[in-house]
Image (cartoon, rainbow, N blue to C red; front, side, top):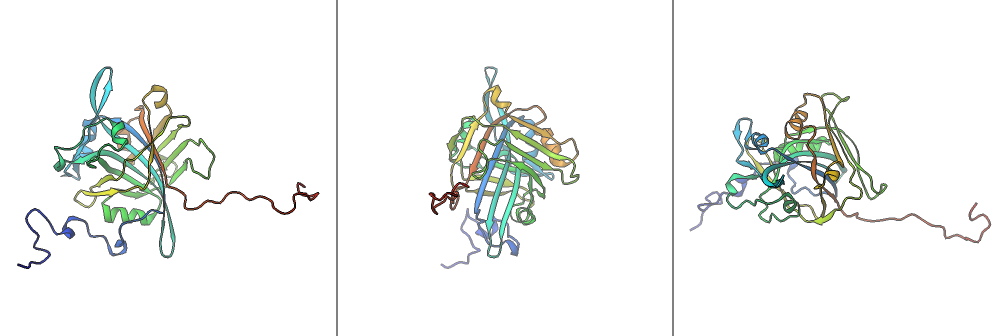
Length: 307
């Protein structure tokens, strides 16, 4: 017996009802990155402090829970939540333009409550190594800043990201830059250009990084009144390092702005002023083409060849 597409069988829903409807100007999906560079830093935080940020949004339940990670402290195992600042730089190709964006997400690792039991409980190192093959542990976006107005509008309208226009002052490693460059990222306070939301400095040269494949990465956002889940598929390997030793944790310093901007407040509440970083990850997409420097071919025996 024939039936319409809207008459879905029991246990299934017509796919249009399972996702937000993008505005007309953002109808072409997926979004393809022409290039991507990531510089991410992680911190352990108190689960009880993180819980209100995860389980409620504007007074409504999100359906999410704080992911817990076992940590050895003074010979005993305690559970910690994890937050991260994931600074990213990317480009996009359009039919009539090239787009460039600098962006940061302040995220807490969470999971959908309706996926438990079956949600992995594992050390952070295993999670960063990509051993969560259920792909339910993901990033809940608490705050997102970008210096591209189109990226801000699309993030809000399509994914429900709590995204705002922000400007960065940064200096990070790149194939076209000097080797062993420190990570320096400052997000300017949108409400006062003389202040910063946060200012991070990571001196990671000489630290052992190893290749890891942790994608696709689940990402969650709640700005559309319902919790939106998307998967971020990054084509390539991350480089990951754990900051297990005291001297390694001192490699990262984070200053949080002394102001009342909401992201600054939440950074202070979750990370605080003296909480050491515990891991770092970086990703650099492969270059599309390469051109080395030139050399002379015209008569090196001439008297003026070196003049």
